[in-house]
Amino acid sequence: MAGGGGDGGGGGGGGGKSSEPAPHPPKDQLPNIAYCITSPPPWPEAILLGFQHYLVMLGTTVIIPTALVPQMGGGNEEKAEVIQTLLFVAGLNTLLQTLFGSRLPAVIGGSYTFVPATISIILAGRFSNSTADPVERFKRTMRAIQGSLIVASTLQIVLGFSGLWRNVTRFLSPLSAVPLVALVGFGLYELGFPGVAKCVEIGLPELVVLVFISQYLPHVLHFGSHLYDRFAVIFSVVIVWIYAHLLTVGGAYNGASPKTQNTCRTDRAGLIDGAPWIRVPYPFQWGTPSFDAGEAFAMMMTSFVALVESTGAFIAVARYASATPLPPSILSRGVGWQGVGILLSGLFGTVNGSSVSVENAGLLALTRVGSRRVVQISAGFMIFFSILGKFGAVFASIPAPIFAALYCLFFAYVGSVGLSFLQFCNLNSFRTKFILGFSIFIGLSVPQYFNEYTAINGYGPVHTGARWFNDIVNVPFSSEPFVAGLVAYFLDNTVHKKDSSIRKDRGKHWWDKYRSFKGDTRSEEFYSLPFNLNKYFPSV
Image (cartoon, rainbow, N blue to C red; front, side, top):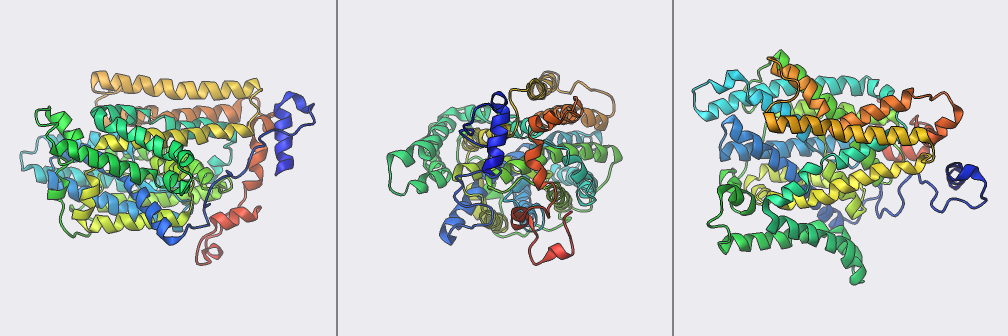
């Protein structure tokens, strides 16, 4: 590996004249990780780390239903039930993904990508004119969302299990992975500080305390230094949550506007009252799903966008778990199981599709624990707290600005791991500079136009009578990683790539040895299926 590192470094630095090896040779696996994908921490630590993953994924799990359920006509009770269902399905999907899918420590949770297509269904004319009671309208809308998710899941299932996605990702190089993975993290910037600022007296302390505990405290206090960076989320959330509760009880928000009260107060979520003590979510709990062709197509396009974003997130998770680069066949298998996850979301009725949780990928970096067992334990917490509704609701009522502060750090970590793949590329090549700069710029600029247009006019730039057609065009171009990844992938595979030196500029020679699953013993160690299933489901 060191020999290859010297070679790559020499090629990058002045034609390899200097005899000195590169000061930081590129590494196939990320060093300095405390527990890699196959090495679990001791049980007490693993359980606490698993609980931390559960806490971090709660943000998205609560924010999405809180935004959508009231629009559908549901009250606090329905909201609590949808959050429980989303948690339960997330737990199942995470277990399936870590056992049979990519086998990476990736949490599969709710996804913001599915929100615009879901809102289109909620606003469809056939629900708004029903004069029946709101709960009935909620159920009818939910059944329509379920139908479109069930149809949309077939896209990922087919692309994943047929191996078609394997043939696509085979042409991915470190160079084209940079814009994709970087914007999977950085592209979510509007969920960071804007969320913190909704209640700055809670969000900002959380951000400061989190950075202080994780980055500075280990160097100030030398005893138990791993304690602080590994459990910084638990420490900081507990401190700021207590502080927010004191503000609430002390009457700091008594005269405030309803909007401020909803984001700042710790007793406003309405979840603890609405949640049942014990309830097991089950498929078709809202009735039989209804199907609409246009909505299904729109959701399919959304599912494809989520698939591209998850591909970037999987690559980030593999890096932070200190695993070798993902072989395309394993990535394809993970995508297939993610399709099964969207199918389960449709069957149970979670109001939302499933994709890789970006914030949990960032948490792997903060804790430096990329162990698979930790994420499986967190899936256990998700299922446990989704059934015991009242206990889960206590954690689910943490104010949203606290989660937004966590996102500021975690999305940044995922963005930076995308940039770290530049170590395999030749940054002195003008071809590299063009592809890198252009794809990242377009990836930020195009969605900016689409999102700004939508914010001002209330509808996207493509505005026809067919709402589903609008979504098919507007949703992909509103996603930063999708646009950047698409542009980078296209340019990297078309701009004069016949040259032999260009293969090295792209960093392709680094990933070649991991192209096939069999070629590398470490890949087999990290990604082979449990219970000797590889005999029946061989990875090509």
